[in-house]
Amino acid sequence: MGRLSIQLAGVPLQNPVMPASGTAAYGQEMAQDLALDQLGAFVIKSTTQDPRAGNPAPTTAQTSGGWLNAIGLKNPGVTTVMTEKLPWLATHYPDLPVMGSIAGATFAEYVAVAQQVASAPNVKWLELNISCPNVERGGLVFGTDPHTVETLTRQVTDAVTKPVFVKLTPNVTDIVPIAQAAEAGGAAGLTLINTLTGLAGSSRLKMCWSFIWLVPMRSKSARRRTATRRPVSTSSTSCRP
Ligand SMILES: Cc1cc2nc3c(=O)[nH]c(=O)nc-3n(C[C@H](O)[C@H](O)[C@H](O)COP(=O)(O)O)c2cc1C
Image 1: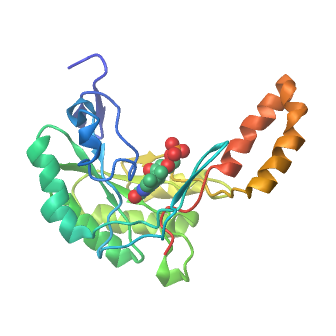
Image 2: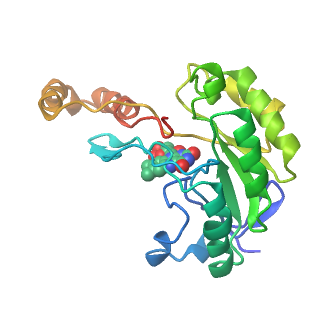
């Protein structure tokens, strides 16, 4: 075992480095620039039952405080993930443990997708992306209600044998009861955090902000204030319907 090796819910990793879900899709493009076998694990893009086209472009935008994204949960659906994406990772990177990211619009969809993804031999853990609108509750995002989080986590943990991580949305008033609900539902761990909601102004508005901040940014206390602006301009829901 190397100096950086760790165990994640009982599974050994050569190091704790893994991409956030969606940022490296299913690895094929990323493998052209990065030796995936150097990673500790690979987290795949969130997968739903059926393919989703996602939001129309542009889905990302750079701001002075970070990137905005509104991908809309674009993914090819669980059948393609099971027959193409996960087998490709297993063939090319047989020693790379994979975390399967699951999304859905109903409890039943989460459970069904979780069972399929968990059956892949290279998937060692599941991650529940709970930043999705729950159609059974009028579009309320799953991850903003503790009772919903506990129920969903319990249904998935009861349906699979692999450890389940719950990826929390930061877009709540108090994240602690949500984290406790995930734990009560049997989560092996938490993933922090999904995309922050945000808003970028027009270039004219941006000029206005620059003007307002020009003078205060010279002082130390103002630099601290600038840091607090980052969440405001870093961005959006990652699985908007
Ligand atoms: C292009 C892109 C695609 C993403 N897709 C997913 C996704 O499929 N599932 C998910 O749980 N998070 C997704 N995310 C959110 C990231 O995994 C991560 O939680 C988020 O970007 C916050 O981390 P950051 O502040 O380091 O960017 C995506 C983010 C980006 C930029």
